[in-house]
Image 1 (cartoon, rainbow, N blue to C red):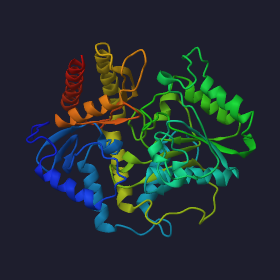
Image 2: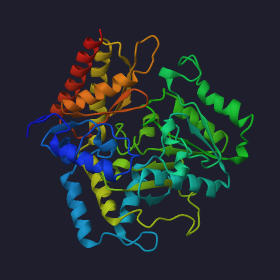
Image 3: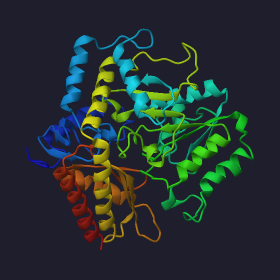
Length: 445
């Protein structure tokens, strides 16, 4: 199979027919990036309904860290589905949920005893984390971050702060969430420069919040992404998360780590926060945990997981087929040494984009860990005005040439291919991005 191979400019006739039916029947709330109508996907290759093939730099919104339809995952799904497809972990027992919880307890940060809550999604993992923090601490308030994305249900949405469209007309949300600036050094909310700032964004939490109007006795915890995802693939500076963890310990707050997008090997470590040697109290996991099957997990220190039976539960969470898919996914990451591979390839990709950055002013910042890389596009290097329309146009042109890449934040290209993408396809995809930026920039002169 030739990859990429654009037989007919997308969307082709079959895709347009699907789009027309979709517009009549599916929710208008889905914010589609462009008209990719998937027929099949394998590994790092997507084929649409018109026979076009694309390189995957998106991993199904970071849900396919071992690629689409991995043979070992498919085998696990088939084996499990032939046994039983559901029997409610809330009310009964099955062994593969225990095995998965044992594995998650091993690979999440910290060598202490843990308890695992299995859910259906990342949003549900966050909801579980919020509830367990309230239950254990008997406190009601939380600290969250501007630019964060934690989900769209009313509880999770109360912590989300990446785009106004996600919150508009949904107030009142869950009370008790105070948002503070994240360490977005390229666009510091405090107009400071690192490291001269002395981590003022962390000290601000202490000096302006906890010592002025948010009593520590009422604060349950801090919910943070180690690398902000939908907010723009924002990587904090060295020392930031360690300082945040110290603040949490000083004020007896739970540190809740949202690894939904950064976890399961994406950054070259099992979980993104490990890049800074920080051990959280609670970890939220989803997306790539089961290679695209609906599954989420909340892993907490055993001493925190002291809630009583019936205080929180789910009918479908921890589905037995999804559990087997997750076990197979973990096995593939281990067997193929994908953590080291992600770290190595990530360094190469960042170096490549920094070289491109030196040639084109439209690239304002290049950042990332492993294969979680953000390329921020700007109008010019001095003003740093987000190149919103330009980033969308570059994204769409890449699609037309056979590369599935999407944006995040205001104007950030997110580079998130499967961790096992063949290096030949990775190189081809990078060539497409570079060619599109080169041509687009030339047109604007």
